[in-house]
Structures are given as structure tokens and as C-alpha cells.
Length: 408
Image (tube, rainbow, N blue to C red; front, side):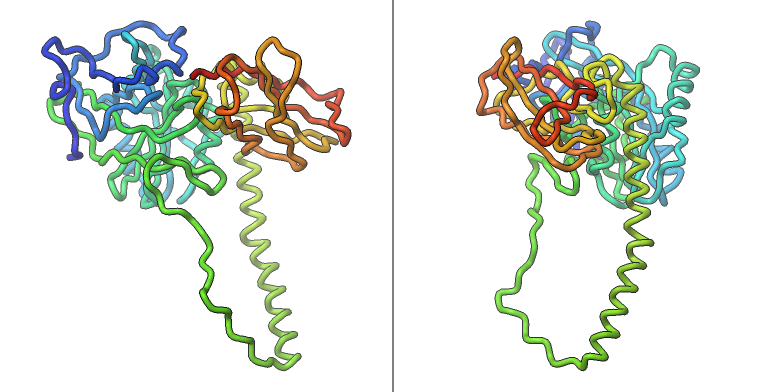
């Protein structure tokens, strides 16, 4: 059993929900206006795994039925990554936001393997149909997938799927390693994907917790790098303290043979490794764009109608802290574009400020970094444009412009 404590160890005698940290910034960046008001389960009906929510994080409550469904699917095949959808309700109570997960639906996806899992359009349709038939009163509040013997983290592929299909501030992701019996939740904190500090188990079937995994908190990886507030070793390149010894003399004929062998080996690696990887990347891009068309109809798709010029994260209307550095993720791949510009301006003003300008195309990656400490709080407009060599916007390109609220 994981190291945990119940709500009742922290709550007052009136059995109110767990108290959030003293900083009221915990919920001020989550848009609660569209969420219904609902009282969460009593504190003696829940079990805390790991730690209470950090500032900006919603309260995650997962039912024992959903835990068992995820566990059964995760253990059905330990040789490949599996996944599915998390169903439940998101609601607000007092000054807190809750995500209550009541069920999990396994996904049937052809796009999975030992080290990757993602949805495709058919999988997405299947999940929607299964939800309507089995759990018509529950909403899709997130997704789950497994990392057999790989550990718990969000890979760059996971970031793409979450940013494309699960864009609401209370959408969550669950990663399970059925080999090491570890798990962790991920989601949006202040407009960026981050690991969550813990979750609560709803004791709806038995009085004791049945979660088979230890809840851990690790990292979110972007394009091969990771970000986390946990202490993580830094990557680097080892350089010897003394120079390498001089290479001994080699006959020219031997050198020619070695060179030819290296050329053949490089060609084999190109065919056997790089080209399949490129195909996988292209497939992932297609999947993410397909998902984003379905999941973002009321958000960034309306603001950025052309999939070749689209900001996926942050979601338009997101509120973020002025002390953050905001990562802008999206797609910039437009015909005849000489470069791409990401700009911001205070809402209602005329002058744009350049955040970044890129020459090459970007397919579902980082477009810019916004160091928000250099700006005053307020509502800002952000746009992505394709321009010619004179930095003039291409006439035929669609407008991609979103709003972001910066709060102190």
C-alpha cells in the first residue's frame, strides 16, 4: 500500500473538504465560470496518495472502480503501451476545483508499441461511442496510458497528445508503470503541462484503499528535455580532462576500406532508423491535428482556423502568473513562408512586441518562450503569422490570434 493519509487526519470535525494551501493562487488561474457547483465527497471517504495539490492544481479524486479498470487494462499486456479515456465530472466547491474520475475506458489503438501510445481518429470515435453507451452521464475529463518498465513521466509525444486533445484547465493525464507499480497524474498548472503532487482515492467500494501503485511525481519532457520542480540530474556532455592520444599511422588502403564501411553503415542506419522515425513523427502530427480539430472546436481552432498556423498551448482565455515563463506550442508550416513571427500586445492597443521569429517550419513544437516578468499584468493578445522576406504577412494566410490574461 502506498504511503498516504486520509482527509480525516487533516479536516475539521465538520467533515469539510480538504483545505488548500494558504495561498489563494491555488485556484485563481483556473477558469471556473463554466463549472457546476457540487459538494465533493466527505473527507472520511477519501484517501490521500502522496501530497495535497500545489498552487494552481485542481483536486483529483479517482474512484476505486476507475482504478480497477485502469489496472486491469494496464496488466493485460506488459510488452506494449496501452491507454484509454478517464471519465467523470469537473466541478467547483467554495474556492476549489475538483476533478472526480469515476470510470476508465480502454482504447483500441493501432498506433502503439513498446515505447509509445497515441490516439488516432478511429480510437477517438470509439471512445466517444463507448462513453455514450456505457456512461452517458459522465464527461471525458482526461486520458491514461502505460509505460511498462519505463517509469512515470510525460514524453514529448504525450505532451503533443495532451496539448491537442485535452485542452481544458481541468483535463488530466494518468501515467502508470505496471512493472514498477508506480503512477502519476499530469495536467495544466498556470497554463502549462506539469506533474501533479498527488491525488485522492474515493473509497466507494471498500473502506481501505486498493490503488496498487505508488503515486510519484516526476517530469514533463519537451522535445527531449525535461522540466520539473523535483530535483533532477542535469544532462550534459562528458569531456576528458586530457587530450586524446594521437592516432597511429594507418595505411591508405585500410583507411579507404574503413571509410567505405562507414558509408555503408550510415546508409543502413538511415534506412533502418531515421526514415521509420520520420514516418512515426508524421503520423503523430496527423493524429494530433485530427484530435485538435475535434477537441478544440470552441477554443484555439476558432482562433486559429488553419492547421498549418496554429497555437495549441496556451489555450485562448488562459490566465497565467506574471512570474512565469510561458511556453508557446503549436504548428507553423505554411507554403512560401520565409519565417514565422510570434507577437504580443496589450489588448486594445496597436503596437505588437516580437517574442520570437523562426525561419524553419515547426510541426507541433515550441514556437516561442514568453518571459512574462518583463510585462505588466493584464489581458494580452498573441498572434502567429507567416511572413515573407520583408516581414510582411502573407496575404493568403489565415489569422491566428488568441488572448492570454496575465495575473500578478
